Image (cartoon, rainbow, N blue to C red; front, top):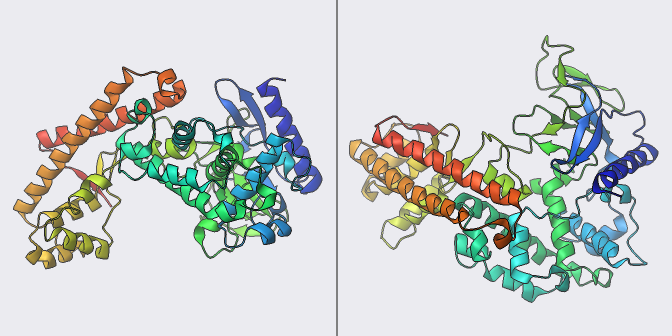
Length: 482
């Protein structure tokens, strides 16, 4: 059986499971699955869908989250674990049982859904990191704290060298992409460490690092926010059958709404009043009614996609392993470069750092690529950097909006700092792009798509920096964004 046929068969079994066990027979399903070599799995509309209409409705009982997992599993193994860790442990056990063909395994009512998950995540930098660090992930047990410490060692030095990739690969990551990838790696290590105690249980003696990584990536790439009533916002997550097969489009109007009995994907956000897909209870939308009735939003045969969030391509690659064409959320992260000015040994540097932290302006220093807008936070930080500490009150007044700037001399120094910073970023990106001429997917041990994605990100960032430097040369105004 080909991969395409296998994907379609799993989709059919998933639909049967939803119909037979989760009362989905009378619920909305205006989508089907297709599969191809160049596009992979895609969710396709099987009919014309009007604006603000339901596409898929999934009963709450079919969602996979800490509320729907067996209580015996939760009580025995999941005390004090986060939702991400609980789902990772559950899926790791499922994967290890499949891999070892265990005769005894945790009974799961979700098998038809679990069968639809991807078998691998080869395009995510976290995978590259672990594979270059350990070579054979199946040979490392999930309880191996020495392996975890070895992985942590790769992050003891900042920036690219901290990422621990082989020298060919990490040189292809722009600084922004390396930072995003490093954040993902740190989250994985924290969750692995949080699971060590649970993994020592005899039930999980077969779980290896390969199982753990796969399960964690399923959760990280496919969960959506869903209110479980957890105090910690990040614990309110769920895996949603069928819905999680929709690809990302930053421009999509498709939206996800949790009604009292279902989790529903709509072609666009409902306006005015609308009926709950299962009970037909009339619900009120936060958006007012319009006159655009019966407008077709998605045509039959068109791919159904939704936005995973306002993520630039560096984030998309680090988190999901792909990039979006003409991404309006692309940005360049300058946080490390700006913060380094306040982490030197000068007497007033630390005091200014504390002032930025107290005022809520420490970190998150970015440039938006499509609009060429520089974060207002960068200007706030650099103005403080170039202001004598005895004039701190002037800066505080500026932060409160009482003054637009801090004088011609300070503004001139800020501009010079930005020009120097952008020049350094340009040189780094040119160096990064130069490495693509000397390396191919084979030497880097990544796919052609991943290689091209990394190149696209670096080119986009370089184009942005060139445009901003030209603005300085021409004395054009620089756009700021909050």
